[in-house]
Image: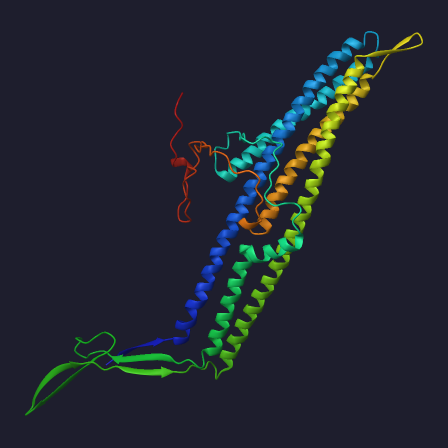
Length: 402
């Protein structure tokens, strides 16, 4: 009767699990790389918020000083300063107030971006506990770049992922090379004529004496081993070349990622070293700008006499210039601090977030709970979106009526 056959590819049974294991390992490293990238995005967004906060604090201080300058200039203009000095100081005050409005807007924009990354309420304004002038220490800027590059080449999950993919292509190549030499197992059987036999193997017979026949079932099984040559070996050779091409491509990708990692580490270390030096200069510049403004403002209230002419020790325009320098010093200082913090995290991410390179000076403080509630038309922060689910805003509950 009709029969069925089954072929068990021994080569695939040996090598496919090995290849799948390497691919699974690569996917696991890719997940870790994605987590590192997400943490990097959150850190950059957080430091953008801090920079905007610092810029706003400096702008508020300069606006306060600008108002004081306008008030004193108006008093002095009655006899010691030209009326145009009032317009000069008022022009500066308007510019400083505009800068303060822009700084407040930058804070709100940066806060919304951080809330998006953390899936918090986009209408809430993020106010970090840390002061905006806080400088972090994850990796010492004095770390030699060659050691950091070596660390990155051994710790980055992207490299581990591609190394696993290279191993998978090597297994695939071995699979095709061994396919002609490892036999496959062939099982054949005839289905029973009376329908009572096993579905794969079996049969039916009848025999007897004196013309009396009785039926019975029997099971037949044939087993054989097969060696497969595709197109007289030419097909196998083509498959081997194809697998070799995949292996070489995976190696090229691995080398490219190695070069990219080394470049990222070198760039991040250079940025960190530069930002560290800039903080020192910016700090000194801010201190000098504050001293300069206070001295010029004090001198504007003092007079000296040249012959019969009574003159100011410092003219209002000199105080205006000092206040402009102070505003720039605030801007440069907070930008330098947050550039330093961003460089710290960029270097930390470029070496693969290894704990052994940490140089944290202080331990973390007490954990503070964060309000994770969101507007009614947004999914909850704890919800995990699935690919087979679509979120329909029309089915969301309506907001409560006032």
